Image (cartoon, rainbow, N blue to C red; front, side):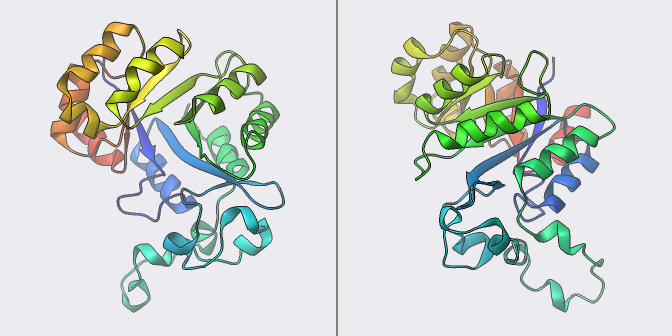
Amino acid sequence: MRPQVVAHRGASHDNAEHTLGAYVAALDAGAEGLECDVRLTADGHLVCVHDRSLRRTASHRGTVSTMELAELAELDFASWKNPWADLDDEAPERDAEHDKVLTLRKLLEVVADYDRRVEIAIETKHPTRYGGLVEKRVVELLRDFGWDGPGTPARVMSFSYTALQRVERLAPDIPLVMLIDRVEFWPMLRRVIGDDWIVGPGIDELTEHPRFGQWITRSGHDMHVWTVNTPTQLELCRELGVKAVISDRPAYLLELLDN
């Protein structure tokens, strides 16, 4: 069975990550799932932003947690990806809304309104000044969409075991993905994570430690792997029976799989 292709922060190889433009491009390419990172603004909105600081993606000195949504909405979250776009006379005209900060609610609306089933993997970032409030708000928002029960298209991911425990207590039916970026964490995590939790190792760890993937497979947990962008990486995931591959290049991976 071939793995589900999930767009990492949207089609982020060619588009500014976490923008509506990146997610629309991923959907147009046929991505079967979308992945996003979420943080809370000072006034309690969940926004799709990876870094704590806004310096890299919005050329701003502030941090997400100290700014209100209205302030973030004034920033440009796309120009950093292609700073010379204004000089390209042949570039298609862009929708300004596609380049602004994206709220999780807006992204869920896009998924809900799409003409086929699209799954969404939501990563909560830690540490954060708001602690468990992030998971509480994520579950509340999923509940608004009726996505907190069996059959939900949503799953929650985190490198924080405690964060996933919070989600499990609040909404036991939402699938959980325990992200792992270091192979040495596995012996401890294997003993404490839930039997039905998914394990999310990074592709670099699987490549550098060939037995790591086999250990996870033998444990009976499904695997969702990040960030898979090359034919060699995809082939390794297929050999291991990985259920989902999270990629910056969803169109390219779909093409490889179809061929």
